[in-house]
Image (cartoon, rainbow, N blue to C red; front, side, top):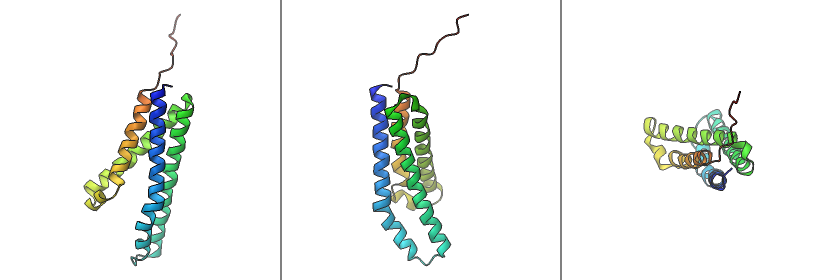
Length: 137
């Protein structure tokens, strides 16, 4: 693996971890508290709590995948998966902000995951390709 590839994976892991910290310690109090006070039915409130924390676990998985890819060149598939997950999060955020409710543009959702996906993908694209033997018959 090239050193540049490793650096991109570690940057993607670090940005993802910052996303986890911001999501749990900054975002949760701003979102979950008001949601509980909204008067919505408890099942709606608690499925949102569940989904909120599932998102955190998914991003923690991305942190682990990018970190493993940075440490072991044979784990490039993990960087591909983590980059695809981040790209999917970006598409969901941008898509919902564009087509469902423009209020989402005032949150980090449409902005946070595109850069992580691009940085992770650059790591994949800039890795040293393994030697592939030719078929000599």
